[in-house]
Length: 242
Image (cartoon, rainbow, N blue to C red; front, side):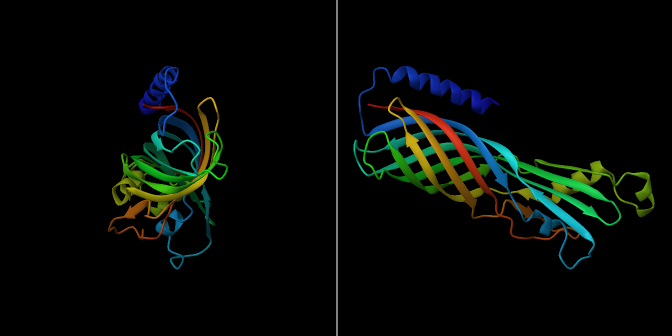
């Protein structure tokens, strides 16, 4: 992926620059990593609770990549710091449907987001290289609002009399009526800054906005709250900048 390759190039450049950098309140760095993203309410969009019975849904999460170019302001030995950066991340959903007639299908979404992140960092032990607690959030534009896939068994011969549309046509209709939305999320976590510049961060984000917007349709798909949650582990490298 192009953004990951660019981040690696930035990481290499920062490593070279760090040889001549002196201690400063201003730092820059890059983080790479991944995590687990889940959205547990997409099933409520597809089937209303009062529509019919004898069916089940299974919501699952998916693994996601993330990358961030960040800038940190913190006076040496200070209890606090302020961080801001450019972030790339995914938000996903995956739900499988089954009913008493053995009909099943799986719907998956993977939305690519690019945006801004900002956090307030607290350093309880004051040391330059130490544990920190972060609280903040991020906003991101959705780069792939139609990135949805659909698979199922509705084309099996035993369902031919029911007149179901083809899998390809069903996927087309879903892409047309279920659209990925921009993201605004609150987040926080813990991290550790090592003396040689490496950083390790574990963060959780909860999306304040719905991840999927249901457009007006005739397929009984409804608008319903669907907020993504995800946890990410990243490894980074930072340097002092003059």
